[in-house]
Length: 213
Image 1: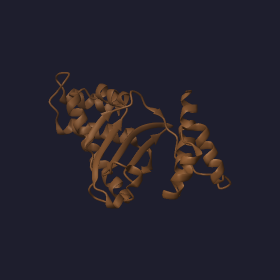
Image 2: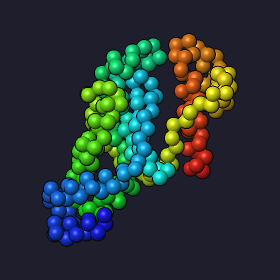
Image 3: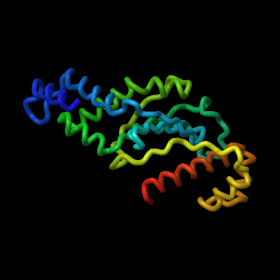
Image 4: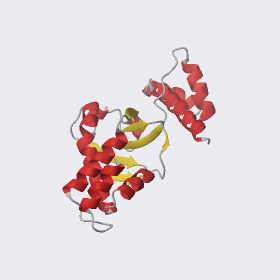
């Protein structure tokens, strides 16, 4: 890939920040395709109004998309399913060190590079996300170079079938700011809430362990 980059840049580029060409655009696409090759995509549901898609490769989180849907002020009383809510916003995250490496390999203007990254993502992954969400109004409205460096990626956790609801509540109370009384109230409104919080906290603890926090 780096040999191909040098060859094309020698042909196309006469200064550090060249005017983009179709060939350079294809080169950026190829770089990004190579970067995401073999990555595993995970779909994570926080609430009916918030979903996250993560791409992990070689133990690192290389890309993330956060989708927000219409939400009433009091989130817990809003019982609408995601399919009943208007789509509000889609944010693409790619670690800053990844974008910087790409900018170093292919020295075009950063603003233009960011634009092409968004175009590449929509051409490459947006349809898959729309299919997963079962709706065609999903879009990417913002791109962030975040976090500073690629972080450890841990696949979504699965609950051991032997773990009881009481054990999950005890774990949540011990590891979060939730108390048992409030958790038991939430179960009445959302029977799946305890398991969701339990698995999210398990995953969060494992990521902290791997990062050495």
